[in-house]
Length: 331
Image 1 (cartoon, rainbow, N blue to C red):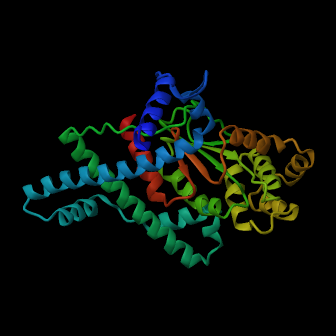
Image 2 (image 1 turned 180 degrees about the horizontal axis):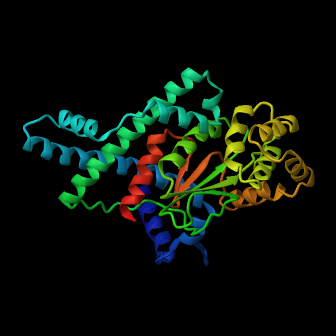
Image 3 (image 1 turned 180 degrees about the vertical axis):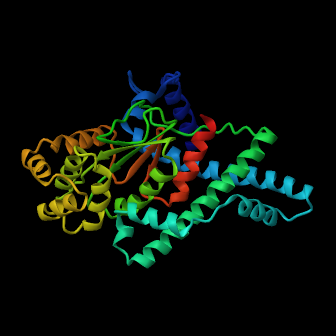
């Protein structure tokens, strides 16, 4: 028998001794079985991240192609180029923010944007408001076209198989169709980037979006736990979001003096706030958040779940608006 024939016969013989895998089995080691369920538990978040990235790429491609087909069809009916037709429709729907609206929105800011010179911050705010309104108008136009054309997308978004991720601070109605859970760290620079985005989303979706905050203080951010307690103590007086947003502008100076100044700026009862900090009772805020993050095997901040759909890291406001609008369409 030549060498090739020997190797082939040995391989076939070895394969014959291995029992076939059955449904739900990923591998066997002798009589021990490794199930697909075990793999899901062991590598759940990593698998979810990979699936989420693959879904986002596929969904973006589908949405772009669907929108292009619908706009092309409608534009051709009016003998217009698709982009010209869409620009006309968006312009007809968008009301530019007034000076009063911009000024009012500026007064509600307490995140990083507020630390900019006022004129620059208001200019940035006006641009962001225009962009978001244009994006919403485009979504509305595309939704109308989709309804008329009876579009059906069968691609399923990967979701965390948990009905309630919880939260130590909540903004929005309990019956909101979209729930956004945010794991964040007050010393995290990417969370600081996300803070004004969340503030804008709270303004854009007051009745349809419920935002839940979860503390996830990372080990390399030693002041994040104290900051989490300060925000939770402010929450006892109904000012969690004001102080939480402001904390991000002081990431390098998260001291007791900073917390007390932010409490003063938020018009809190200083004695009650100080007593809360001294008691340490709000340490449960970050302890519960840290336990929840570890149970989910999270390894970075911010991590966001929108109706269970994961988003790792901070994104532009358009990303969140797009997902929220998508969730609203399917609810």
